[in-house]
Structures are given as structure tokens and as C-alpha cells.
Length: 261
Ligand SMILES: NC(=O)c1ccc[n+]([C@@H]2O[C@H](COP(=O)([O-])OP(=O)(O)OC[C@H]3O[C@@H](n4cnc5c(N)ncnc54)[C@H](O)[C@@H]3O)[C@@H](O)[C@H]2O)c1
Image (tube, rainbow, N blue to C red):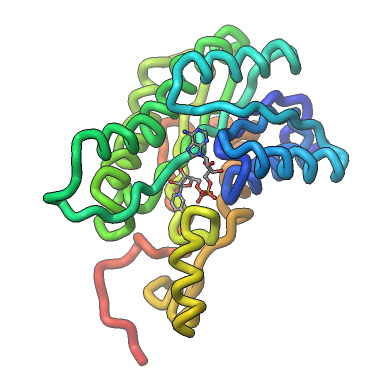
């Protein structure tokens, strides 16, 4: 039996990177997937990959920062697949590194609206449906930037720290409901978001240095985050609630150090 057999799942940010890998993994393991993103071309590619592999998926073009759109894609899942068992609220933006004096309130609000309010809206409108079924799993993508400085800009890091709090507080807000809330804190993963970093390193010939401070000595792949999302989505994680897990090759396990050699 497949690990998500019979489950109805929404994955946001499914047009690229971690969201695409997760949507594919969920479908491979038997879930019917609503793939959500605002990048329509990439979204169509993800759904084609899933259906060509024999899975079930549909594309919904939506902005996760907009409440009416979130309500709409959740309703689409319930109406199309007959219920809602899993949401992976993964869509996010980095916002770049803007010097403190140049950071505006609009810049902060734009990032918070997608990275933190987006997952909040998925919880607000998805959790009550799951609670009505007595069971469900909502997973959010935070980041190692939520745990330590120097892995993104200030509003990005704050938005991701907010996500860590969101899954803790949601677990208690929905006490006894049967719905679980957890977050994943990825390390450096090669995706659309980090493409400029990898491109720059390759063009300079310094790509061999990527991961040099990481005990696993490399960057991560989207599938390695999808594997954690798959576990948290499945009934294998039935006693896992209100937690955030770093999937970073060990990057955040250490104090700062000078690498040997
Ligand atoms: N790549 C990394 O190293 C890394 C590390 C830590 C956390 N993350 C987080 O992982 C998540 C996935 O990012 P990724 O690395 O796969 O990057 P990505 O750019 O490849 O994918 C992000 C997707 O989110 C979509 N998106 C952005 N804003 C949206 C909106 N308002 N509505 C709908 N869709 C929207 C984009 O169109 C894109 O397809 C993000 O939350 C990101 O912050 C990534």
C-alpha cells in the first residue's frame, strides 16, 4: 500500500523546486494532488510530470497571499477529490538582501504576506475542514533562516521564524482536533529561488565550495525536502505535532568554526 493512498493533498509553490518535488512525491505515493502556484507554465509542467507517471493532479493558478484565492483552491480540492487531508503550504519568496536603511515597510509586508500570512491562511481555512474529518496534516516550509542569522534577508528570516511559531500555536489552537501542524526548515537547496547563487558560483568556478561549512559537504536537493514532507503528510507521523525540523545536512547543528584545509 502506498504511503499517501486515498489522501487529498494541496501543495503550494508546486511549479518549481521543493513544491514540485513534493507534489510529485505525494502523487507517487497515491495522493490526489491540487498543485497551486502563480507561475502557470511551471505548474502545467508539474501536473504533466505527475499524470505521465500515472498519478492524479490538477493545476490551480493562485496567489497564496490572497485570502479569497486560498479559500477557492481549498474548496476546489474538497469539491474535486471529496475532501482534504494534507496541505503543504510551501510557496515563498526570498526578497533578496536589502541593507537595513533601505528596507521599507512595503518590502517587509510583501514578504510577510506570502511567506507567513500565506501559510496562516491555509491553516485558517484548511484546518477546520480537516478537524471535521477528525484528522489531517498541515506542513509549512520555514527555513534554516528561521533558526540562525545569515541565511537570508531580515524580513525573510523573520517571516520564517514566524512560520515556526505558527505551527506551534496552531497545534494548540486546534488542540484535540486530530489535525497536525509541522514545519520543515530546509538548508541550501538548489531550486528556482537559489538559482542565482548556484549560477554565480559555477560561473566563478567556486561551486566546489558550496556546502564547505556543512558536515554533509554539499547542498541539498528538492527531493530530500520532499521526503520529509512526505513523512509528515503520512500517517507514519501520526504522533508528530507542533514541531519544526531542520533538513540541512547538519548545517545548523554546529557553532561557527573555521574549516580545516
Ligand atoms: N531553496 C532553498 O535553499 C530554501 C531554503 C530554505 C527554505 N526555502 C523555502 O522553500 C520554499 C520553496 O522554495 P524553493 O526553494 O522551491 O523556490 P522556487 O522559487 O523554486 O519555488 C517557489 C515557488 O513559489 C511560488 N510562489 C511564490 N510566491 C507565490 C505566491 N504569492 N502565490 C503562489 N505561488 C507563489 C513561485 O512561483 C515558485 O514556483 C519557499 O518557502 C522557500 O522560502 C528554500
